[in-house]
Image 1: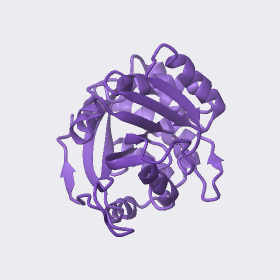
Image 2: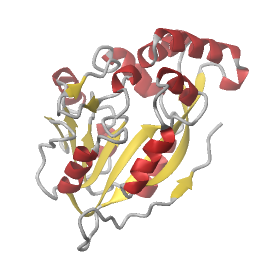
Image 3: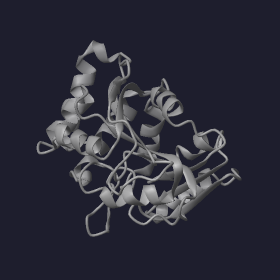
Image 4: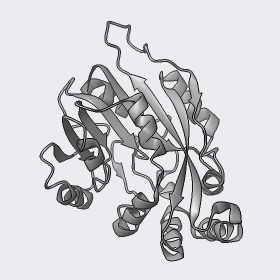
Amino acid sequence: MWNAARRGLKALSRDGGVVPSPNIWYYPDVYEVENQAQDVDGAIWQVLAEEADWAGLDVADVGCGDGFHLPRFAAGANSVVGVEPHEPLLRRARRRTADLAAVRVVRGSAQGLPLGDASVDLVHTRTAYFFGPGCEPGLREADRVLRPGGRLVIVDLDVTAEPYGRWMREDLPHYDPAAVEEFFLRQGFRCRRVGTRWRFTDRAAMEAVLKIEFSPGVAAAAIADILRDNGFDGYTVPVGYRVLVREKPAGLVLPGHSSSSSSEVVSPRIS
């Protein structure tokens, strides 16, 4: 597992302890600004609808944070459960979804989901825990709670996509994108790369977000890049993602095998 503390994403350590997420845990109001700025064209949601349409289904959002994505799922799903280990974020998620009868938010981890066997049709997780080697316990838990034919969808940042990926690589010199992608390929996932845009309302918002996502030196360089390069369209930043999808077999298969396709589909990048 790569250095989630420096990257600023939720993860779990190998011994089961929760690794603090220095962005949303400590700066939840700034992270709310980040959530609102992300994927302004809805490219990720379009791919999710194509790969794992949740209409009428039971959905679990693992590492849901303060519940930002729960209302979007609730608009079409039969039921939605958000799972989050950090108590202050749980309270924020419950306040956000208090008027949504189809949504409940529970405390738990990816390695120990507080859900019954075969209880949901879709497990969704976004930039949380599932970063590559070391996340096998969470993969097993997702398979446990999924019904036959259900899908696990992992949305993560694409460290190979410029310019955001370059800034990430500068903060994470030992991260090996090819090794991580090979890991998920071996685990039976297919991958779709998605180009998105983050759009900030003003310079202060852009700077505040980058400062909770990167080390001070890298954040300063990223801010300078955005201000200098007219190709970034003011305060709009291209950010690439990977959407990884694996189906739980509906029939009998041998342990360790998957019926999922391992081919990669590349989505057009939004410039």
